[in-house]
Amino acid sequence: MDLTLASLAAQSYPVHLMEVVVVDDGSEPALVLPPIRPENTRLVTAPAHGWGPAHAVQAGVEATEAPVVMRLDADMVADREHVEAHLRWHHLADYLAVMGRVVFTDAPDTGLTATRTRERVEDGSAADFLGPGNTMEWVSEVLESTDGLRTAGHRAWEVFTGATASVRRELFESAGGMDPAMAMGEDSELGYRLSQRGAVFVPEPVAVGWHLGCPTTERRGAAAVRFGRPYKENRIPRQGSRRDSPRRTWQVPFVDVVVDTVGRRFDDVSETVDALLGGDTADIRIRLVGEWGRVTPGRHGTIDDPAVDVRLVHENYRCEPRVEFVESEPAPDPDVPFRLMVSPGSLSRPGAVRALTGAADREGAGLVLLRSTGRGRGEALRLERTAAFARARHLGVSAGERDALVAQLWGLHLVDREEVLIADGEPGERPPKDWHKKMLKAERNEERWRAEAERWERRIRALTGGRLSRLLLAVRRG
Image 1 (cartoon, helix red, strand yellow):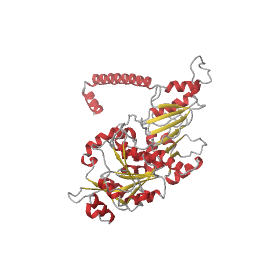
Image 2 (tube, helix red, strand yellow; image 1 turned 90 degrees about the vertical axis):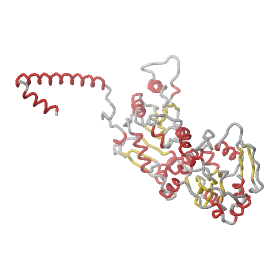
Image 3 (cartoon, one colour; image 1 turned 30 degrees about the vertical axis):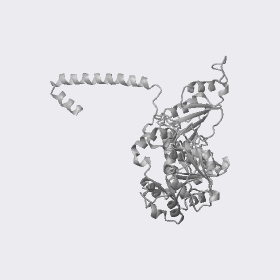
Image 4 (cartoon, one colour; image 1 turned 45 degrees about the vertical axis):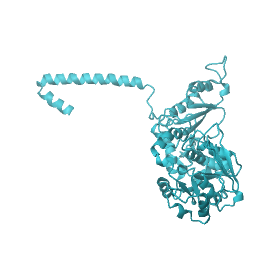
């Protein structure tokens, strides 16, 4: 911490515009601010009801009112233009997540004092003093292969690291801040939520910071991955390992499906919802918009009840954990990657959700629609990328113009109706309702034809004395 504060005391950014908050998260003995530090530095103690990096960072953010929040690990030495390089981006746009360049280096055995650190940072010779160090190889490869994240698309958040990162306070708060339940991997999880709010990730190579020593995630990589996996999988639908358990449900689903049932027949609604529930993507949440206030207790009509379809839909799905009942179209859940709107009566193929989301990711599209057939049909379904529409809303675009802006920034992709929906009268890929009767009939036919074949074998054997039968049977069985 002493060296970190010493490097911050030598920054090129105006000192009167910078506030430094040091958070003591239960240190023993308690932390004491060193003499070499920025002028406006405070020490706060994290609340006793929690612990860990996420808890400490959240406490530090809540202790300030600055418009930009920058996190810096306590074992980092920031180069002279580090803070300035971060802040210049936030003067350009308010939806950026800026990441500094982290260099891992072993601290020299001698000579690394707070005084010397400040001097080296001030005169620009910190790199000579601390050495070239190493960056995370996989992060460098991603940055190089995506032209500095310009072509990274929806995966840009994956390289977000909390060792040196900054965002606007409004963006940080809209994402919900830090999740104190994340004892490890809290920066990646925050990066995902920032991405879902429409953030653009900017790697800033000028904001160099030397990380003194190797972090736990590098020294004990396998153990760190093992510990963090269930925490990340429950909260990050984009977590690759989550795809290894395709029939699971999680805290945050991969797709939110919205079906408007108002004024629609039970048969149409159930056909659509059952097809989605039975598809090969179980990681969905279906929200049924309906007049559920009409489902009242007490005496009511049955077959001729004016609310019969509402009652039937509610009763059919009230025990299904992946179905929710809402009175009006819900606002998009910002943590869910996709929102799929489906019209009742549309019968999706088992792989429809996978095909739609796969096309969106493959093409980098923010909106996926069905290709027009020219038959005057209404929009049977549409898939929205949550992050794309979040950015459009943040930019102040009206509801009627959002599709156009999303198409411009992210892209619009069209799929053929037959690729995801089963046409009227088409048997599709689902078994027929009388499949059991047809199976029994086929089994009876199999037994009848087997008996007939054996009868002919016996007759041929009797007529030829077995010679021709052996030849015929050899040919048939061969």
